[in-house]
Length: 113
Length: 117
Image (cartoon, rainbow over all chains, first blue to last red; front, top):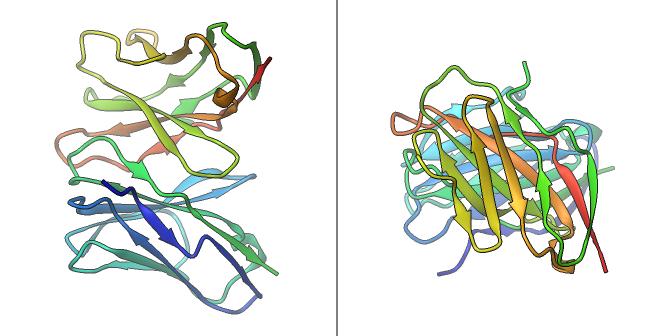
């Protein structure tokens, strides 16, 4: 079974631009979560989606948004990029919201110049 | 308050030796799960092992075992017979409220393990 896939793997943007990252969960998994990883803040939760509904949201500004489609694929969008948004963005999937283990994709490395 | 504490920023271990990575946690929820993930330099988080708060026995997965001491709120990862490929960052994480709508994963700051030939 294929794992979680994320596209693109690497991205360079400039301040003020916006970016969309994509995540395809493991087949059959309906819950998708997003995390941001930076050297300073570590791994921080962004949001979680299940059946196209946002279940949880982390403490991030409104510039960060996401959505989930009917096939469970998810996208996250960051508008008006700031230098501090440079990070590794990790997507994780699980069968459902009550299944404990989340499986991660390879991540998207975003660099904001 | 920090929910997951990993006190070892970095560790070295000789190849074929065993190593223990420390993790303590803080929660008042009786239902929670503890996880260990491995992150190589490529960036992908690889799930290693899981321990539920109600599990009676310590979890084991191949060369990985979890030394779960509930009263001490510790969940240390033991890697036996270390291999060069074990060199990576290791993260301890927790989810609360299992079975009734899990909370998101909360991660520790990680321990960088270096295996020496």
